[in-house]
Length: 245
Ligand SMILES: [Mg+2]
Image 1: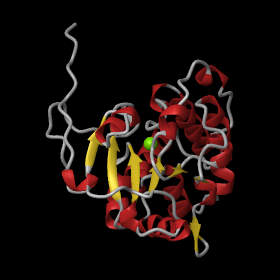
Image 2: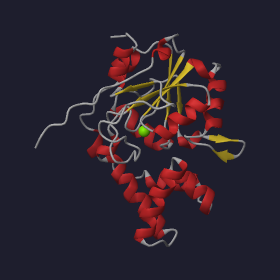
Image 3: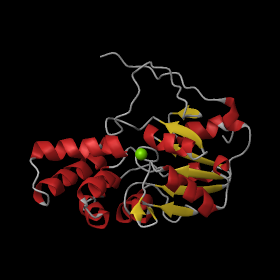
Image 4: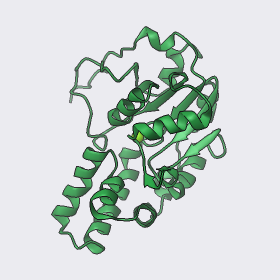
């Protein structure tokens, strides 16, 4: 077997023209390699939910789970909009499993994230109980200035998880910054497109993403996209790119 070499990374100089005031970090496949196992458990429980509670065949359940994820950026918002499934029921149900096998030996991210200047915010499409389980395992319990989970992502009575442009704008307003002074660091191109449309700066963190992301660029493709200001393998690489280590 021949080892593959890392692709060349690219980034745009304008990203560095001024210091961002807020760094908004995604969690899954940005701060830990969730698609290496833990997200597979979530997908199994999502399928079970669709089969047992909604009466779908296994094939249809699997198809819809993926289809809604690709179409809406999250499965739960597709189920909410197309089937009226209450996210307050769905999200806890599909994140209710033993995390312990996945949480041992994870690298603490606290020292790394502490080096980012300005405020640090977590924004995950996982629900609150999921974030509460993950964050201590990567040394980030109580670390962030603000934690936004899918359990909290509602605007005017409707659910607005990532990739909602309105939610990104609302988050900047809540933080009291102009959108251009905030950066979203995420592995999802859909989410980054929304952040860019909201006026934020964007960092595509691609090193941990695997098949769950679904939007992986072809190997050796140019690492450039109109919605992306900077492409990095991981947050350590991002720190180097902004000159903090
Ligand atoms: Mg992610």
